[in-house]
Image: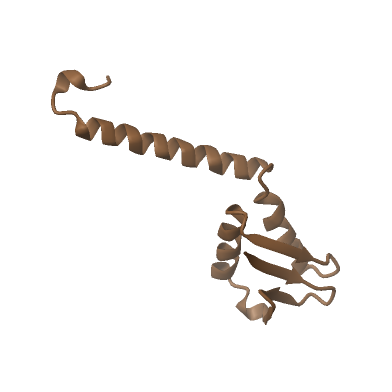
Length: 100
């Protein structure tokens, strides 16, 4: 579990280490977002500084009951089903056995 903290001065900490604002890159935010979707981020956010809004948005959008989280779950499930169907089709030797 990773810990993201934004204190009242707007300082951002990742697992206890301060992250400089210049290091809060798209790559870092993508990593936090992906880990949060996996429910692997513990957020501690003081809302006093504008930077906190960014992390609050990530936290809200990746909660299990959010619409976005549910949509991602549906996409993943559809992808798994497609892969399973593809594997079944590849395993069929005769055209008459195809599911369509």
